[in-house]
Image (cartoon, rainbow, N blue to C red; front, side, top):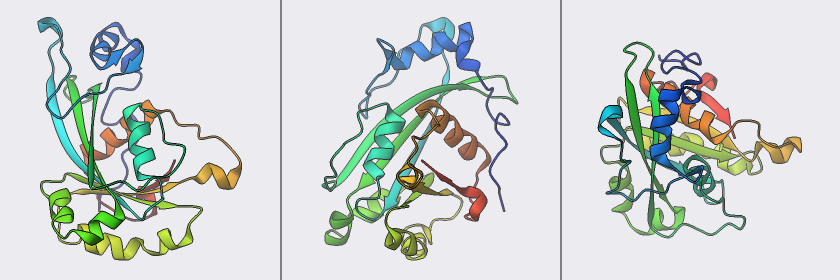
Length: 215
């Protein structure tokens, strides 16, 4: 079974600090903040720094209130909602992030299309879950450290949502960990994205504890 990749084994660490990296990074930033892209939009690069795009569809699954929308907002560089509101229907968010591959020394712009659907909507409309699962490359299963039932529900979720979808990356994410410790999270949004790229690059589909992490 695949295990989590070692940091820096898929993409070049700190490449964004180089001149080349900053040039590519500028295509996804606006006034030093992450640009918001629509489904049909993409970064515009000068011809001399053109790069291939690798697209991934990622379905974020979990009980209501565990932080699915907040996680996607963090990864997209958006403002995180302070008050919980149930997601109505399917919400899609597109995130672009450039990286340099270790093996080929090639620059690739990763396109992550996150699909988030409210639990109530999934239960009410039978066609939403198949739509979220269709052509999905990865599943992120969330539970909250402040909600025991969300953890106990994971086996049923794994079976219901991804049991019939082979050859996909599956990761379990524990949210709201800092509430228990009384600490702030130490990982940056950028490191979360790079961690996701590493896992997608090596197909980390093992759901043992090695493929669990918290935010």
